[in-house]
Image (cartoon, rainbow, N blue to C red; front, side, top):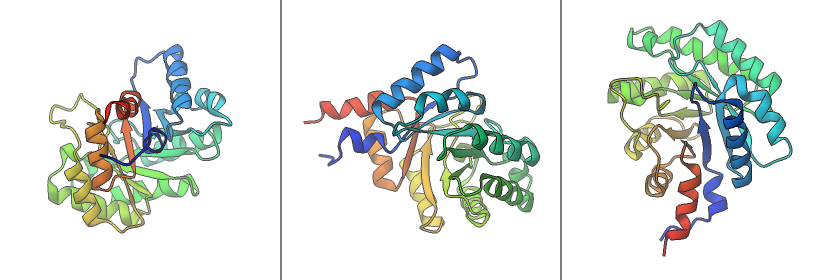
Length: 230
């Protein structure tokens, strides 16, 4: 039996809607539901930050702005601008989830990757920054290297995946990915699992493995499933 309440579990969850076809009405409904459940944050495309800010002001739920999403291959300058724009238009505790430049990483341009991440960290000016390393596209050796680069760049979190299903090699993130990352990075660096957590069991397994945050589209059914435990 897991000793966790619905309220406690909700504070692990970054309730996520990054659908490119999402309408304003859908985003508004999504944000209001997340507010009612007191999820830790809503994770949204940056253009929705002003709307979410108006709806969430004074609530327990904050915002994650997805920077360089979903490919990460944009210029550093564009990521820095997007970060600053999100912070300017967001809640005081808005967070930034940036996508690592996977193409540069795969090309062995590790210094450029580190500088890209560091530039976003600096632009965030103390706001929480999570870097998405996209573990489904990396070998174990590459995951370790990406984690070390992100750690050196000063991120607050390493995030496993975008969950972007257009990648032909995409697989769900697992608690094993969380454990691998935890074995590599300094204790100050937290871990967010995303791209594969759709059930209460997978959420609790991830927390047990060391995840501090869960990015999911299924926050409501996950939390509600606690009522079915006996």
